[in-house]
Structure formats: C-alpha cells, structure tokens
Amino acid sequence: MKTYSEVIAFLFKQYPNYQNKGAKAYKPDLSNITALSKIIGNPHQKIKTIHIAGTNGKGSVSNYLANIYIENGYKVGVFTSPHLIDFRERITINQKYISKEYIVDFYNRYLEEFKTVSPSFFEWSTVLAFKYFEDEKTDINIIETGLGGRLDSTNIIQPELSIITTVGRDHQNILGNTLYDIAKEKAGIIKNGIPTLLGPDIKETKVVFETVTNKKNSKLYHAIESETKSENLPDYQLNNWQTAYKATRILYEEFPVKVNNENFSKFLTLKGRWQILSENPKVVADIGHNAQGMASIKKQIEKEKYKKLHILIGFSEDKNLKEILQYLPNADFIYATQSSNERSLGSNEIGKLVKGGKCVCIDDYKVAFKELMGKVNDQDLVLITGSAFLVGNILHDFY
Image: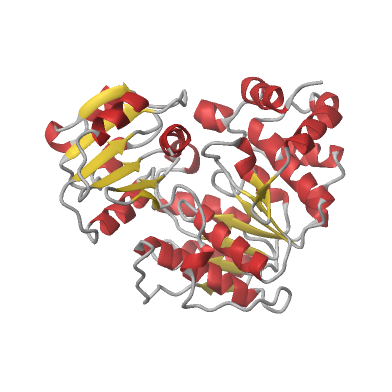
C-alpha cells in the first residue's frame, strides 16, 4: 500500500507528464482518455460541466465562476492545471483540495486495469477529477483544458457551455504557428447545439469561431470589454471577469445566481495571477509565460507607482523567448534564474536575449531571489514572472 507521497512520485516518474517532459508527453488523441473513462464507468457523462479553453485567462475565469457559484450555494468542482505547489490544487470542490486518501484509493483501485491503456499523467489526472466529482455529487464542474482543445483529454465532456478566453501564441510546436491555427485547435471544444462564449480579447480570430459555431448550430456569445477600473486588479483581470459574468447570464436559467457586476474583486482568489505577496516593498507574482501574458503584465506595470523595478524571470525551454522578452517591462534590475522543473531553461540562455544585456544570471532560484531582495527598498516593486514553476518555487520556499 503506497502513501500519498509515493503515489504522486510514481505518477510523475512512470506516466509521461507535460509539466516535466513537455511535448514528448503530449498525446494528440482521445482514444486513451475514452478507454480510461470506460474502465471507471464514464463519470464524465454523469456530471454537469463548463468547459474552458484559451491561451491565457482559463484559471482566472474558472476561479471567478467557482466563487460565484459557491457563494450562491452550489457545490462546485474545478479541474485546472498546472499546479504551483501541491498536485491537489488541480482538483477541488468548493475550493477545498481533493483528499490524499481519495487519490491513494483511486490509484490502488484502478492501477492494474489502467496498465492496459498506459495513460499519460494528464489523462490519469483527468479521469481522477471526473470520478471524484461524480462520487461527491457536485452541482456544476468547471473543467479547464490542459493544452489546446480539440485533442485535449478533457474534450470528451458534453458541457453546458464552452468558453474560449483568449487566443495567443503559445505551444506553437503542438498547436500551430499562426493565431488561426491555434484558434482552430481551441475551437475544437465547441459542441453541437451547446452555446459558446468568447472572451472580450478575441477579435482577430473571431471568424474562426463564427465558422465553427455556425456549422455546429452553437449559439455564439461574445463578452464585452470592461469599462470598469479597479485599484485591486490589473486590467486583464477585468476582461476575465466580464467573461465569467457573461457565462453566469447565459446559464442563469439552469443555474440562477445573484451577482453584482460591480463588486467582483472578491471573487478572484487565485494564486500566481498578479498575486501581491507583500507591501513595502510590493512583491508581485504572475505566471505570465507567453507573449500575450507578458504584454498584459507590462501594461499593468506601467500603471504602478514605484521607485525602482526589480524582475526575477525564468522560462521553460520550449518558449519563444525573443517574442516574449520584447514585452518584458523596462527594469532597474533583472535576474534570470532556473526553476526546479526539468524543462526550465538555464539562466545564461535567458540572459543572452534580455535587451541591453543588463541581466544577472544565477541558476539557483533561491540564491537569485535572495540576492535580488537584498537590493530592494520599501518604495520599490518586485515582479516574479515567466513561469508557473518559478512562481510555485518562490511561493513554496519564501511565502
């Protein structure tokens, strides 16, 4: 009988996982997930879901929606990825992590039968979430795609609503090089007769979704851009809110809620998305890891008041750094480092591409963060960004 820690270690070691292996762990096929689901009784057919895809914003929209429905008395499951610190962050009900005991029991119950399928880490996690939500008799479940949409393991569900938050360049080695290619992959979650909602930022590729929804008789909605300003949240979170709010209006007949469109900051409780870790000095963590995400961060930095800006950056090796770094905010001090994830790019490789060459390169993220913080004054701003894995490391070890 394995302990929880032994089960998680086994999963990461034995099952291909994108978090550590990248594209080598990606299985562009739904046969595995279909077979796994059949083994455990197809729980995805017995739960109500909202399906969310998008280059950025999936986690924030999921978090907004979960908190809205929880406040209105619903039992809400959420399946998200990746995790920052604890694997159990991926699977929650009413913001409480799945129990370690449930994970160990699931592992023991299906280990032998699953060997006939040889699942990936993400496929295993997906069916775990579906079975957990079925067993716990949730009212509504918010399911994020892991990557893309069309061939993502989550795409066996028949949701109440499909949401695409944004379309930007990321994972081009898998999803395609153009925005239109990427949009087509994300449009793969659109289902026959099921409504579809687009986030406010989807403009250039809107025609892709119009074409697919017309073919599939899916009513298409488009969330409006936010005209509201918030002292607590960056602008990109305002548009994520508009997407979540519109979703509650579309689903109101089946899942009625009371929610004030003006009082929304309380509904965002997500780690790693413009997360303020301290004040005086102000330390912010944001997992922005692609060009679109970094551009949003830069826009927010320009609105902040500070004396000096210090940035700690780290990236995975499959990222288009030249494209991302053109949006890196101008900073007084930049430290490049390497997270504990095996796909993490070496600090020197990052430093070579930083504009002006004013970058201190230290592979050990603990040493880099301590050295950076040693230069910081109370009036300064510190940004930790570029990688969910780096943000997770800093949160785990320092906060």
